[in-house]
Length: 294
Image (cartoon, rainbow, N blue to C red; front, side, top):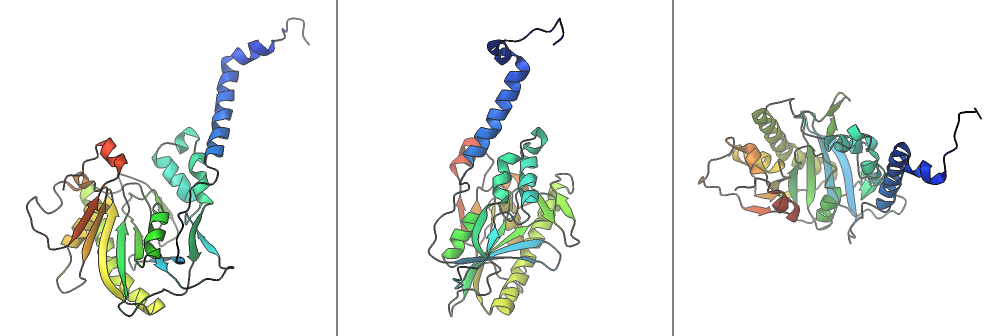
């Protein structure tokens, strides 16, 4: 000890601002890690579901969810996040967690199971075929964010094709050349984003049914477009752009539709549509006053 050194009492040490900050940070991290134990909670289903990743001819990734007859106990399960920590860090960066050193708050998603059989080889079907829902993620979303929702729908006999858009609005995606494209709201203009998104949905509507028939000998009975938030104006624009001599769109499913993000780029108010449409809104969107004018 040096002569001028003074020993601090325990109470004085605890009152030190730096010690208080360090203690709070440590307690926060520990509490956050404890809070995500056994999260996310996987819903129970009565039918096995498979999951696989494919690409559209243009390069956009698509995650398929489908009912399967495979029941092997040793079968590998697909992850919740296709790219693991890269996916969860992309979502963390979008909400500011990564910038604050808090990426670990979403890291539990990177190791979670999807509850789906990885690359299951069969699709449980019927003579009439199965309906196909092509789904567009929201602003800053990705093809994994609604995994449990898609898994539950697939267990009811619906094939889901979740498109991961390449317009810069995905939290992150991996392009055909293997490079990661992170979220970038300035990569395209708003109109360019919607055009890219809708074209990828239409491409999926043409490509996925043929791919499923070829790879799984399963026919598609109907095709629906759907989406969450920004995915809704994307689906509407795609449905509005379908050529009469090509793919038929049998319905629209709009989840928390943020149609204001497509203002001036969608069919005008009062225009008629013969496509059956279901629109539903979560309580969180109601409280947030998101623009959902239809």
